[in-house]
Each structure stands twice: as structure tokens, then as C-alpha cells.
Length: 334
Ligand SMILES: *[C@@H]1O[C@H](CO)[C@@H](O)[C@H](O)[C@H]1NC(C)=O
Image 1: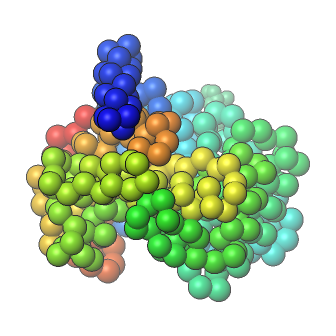
Image 2 (image 1 turned 30 degrees about the horizontal axis):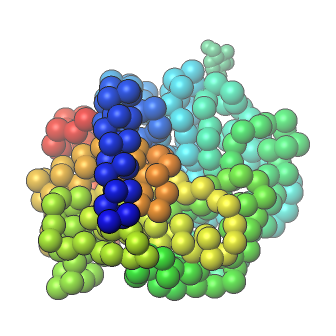
């Protein structure tokens, strides 16, 4: 009974919020899009930035610094999540001078004309490379302070496998102690943990137990009940697992979704209809937060373009919202 009342109060609050803000889409919080560049005949960076503007996309993720893209973003007001390329992370971990140089070359030169928000020290680093994350974050924080740059938060982008368990969401904990040290550091700087969250991969890995509609934010007979909360979609359950692991590590760290998306072709569950449904529902949903945390979730959709040179599964080439000629793969509204 109490739960039903709480749910109905929450539903009323959400309706009021959407009436007050006038829309159910992305603003005033950021919905970004990841700009991967492993494709042939992609538009020039200046055209890409123009495309972001014309579609009302207010944030971008770059997987490494690129001069032409950063120059095109100058004065644009588009929020930037920029990665330290994976292969450069050990170098930035090795000493203050390397981090100073990286900040001078890739941040300071464009600051404050480019609206940097976050630096991601690597994307889904695995194995021995993860040991460089902590010293690289520390060196970059020191380099930013030395350069007199404020307001850019340094973190790292991880995938769900940093969790030992994620089901039910409230039981989630981090797999290893090193991850706990990383989030403890983030807790002292106010940086968010950047998490790549893909219900798609969870679905293709366990099609017997995961309802496609549940993964697509569509009405589904599947509901996860956990600790007094009801989950009607897989994305919320995955994100709340991350929040639970952070709580269990006893840190106050926000979460930013540094990638999420769905392929439009190339394999099981991949279709234009499913990709459109997932990404549009994601954009419409993230402003509401999750069952355990109603705070809006800053989210970067993966990805801007179909990238024909990506390796791995065929689906990897088909996560784009746009074709290289800038035509939409399917209609989407930010
Ligand atoms: C960014 O734009 C401002 C204003 O037009 C200009 O003064 C500045 O030199 C530009 N920055 C770069 C790196 O070109």
C-alpha cells in the first residue's frame, strides 16, 4: 500500500516536472553523443560540430584529443567529455611532466573556449593497464591545478564488469580493491564515475532470461522487484547496481553514463526499429533518474556515426545515429 502510494506520488511529481519544464526530452540536463571516428568518408570535424548543433545535441565525447575537432568546438558551448587515449594512460601515470604536457597541449590551448567537463583516463581499460589509472588521475588533477584550470573533473570510463554481481541491483559490489581505491579518489574530487551501460550486450548474452522489451524500455511482463523498488527496464537495474556498489564502497560519487546505445544492424536483436526505440526511450528517460536515485543522469549515446572500420562483431559497425553522409539512420529527437 505504502509502496503504491509512493509510486503514485512519484508519478505525479514526474508529470508535474514535465509540465513545468515543458518537455520530456533531454534538457536541461545533458544528453551527449559519442563521436567515434573509425569510419571511412566521415564528415570533417567542423561539419560534425555543425550537425551536433543543428540536432540540439549539447554534449560530445571524444575518444582522444583532435586539433580540428577542438578548434571547431571553440565557442560552441557543447559540453566535452574527452578521453586520454588508452595507449597514453601509462605515460601520464609515469610522471608529473607528462601530465603537464598533455594538459598544456590538449586542454589549456582551448580553454575556456571549449567547454570541457570531464577527462576520461582510458576507456574500459583491462588487465595490467588498469594499474595506471590511479596515478594518471592524480597527475592530471595536479597538472590542471598547476595550469590554473578549474571545473574539469578527471575520472575513468568503466564497463559493468567492474561489478562482482549486479543482480539484484541492491546486492552489487565492486569486484576488486583497486576499483574501490579509484572511487575513493573520485569521492575526494567530486568527479563522477563514468560507466558504459549496454542493456543490448546483457540481452544478447542471456536471451533466454532477458525479455527484449525489458531491455528496450518497452512495456514488459518482466519486472524486477528489489528491496522495495520495482524495475520496469534493464537500464535502470544496471545503473542502480552501480549506485549500490558505490554505496557499498562508502563513497559519494555521481554517475555519468559515458556510453549507451543499440545497433541498427549486424546481429541478433539489432534492427533499425530496435535501435530507434532504445535510443529514443533512453533520451526521454534519463532525465528522470533511476528507482534508487531520481537525479537526472547525464548520458552519452553511442554513437554519432556508423563506423565501417570498427573491428569485432559486425554490430560494432552499426551503432550510429547517422550515416557518414550525415543522413539519419532513423529519426531521433533530442
Ligand atoms: C577561440 O575563440 C576565441 C574567440 O573567437 C578566440 O579568441 C580564440 O583564439 C579561439 N581559440 C583557439 C584555440 O583558436
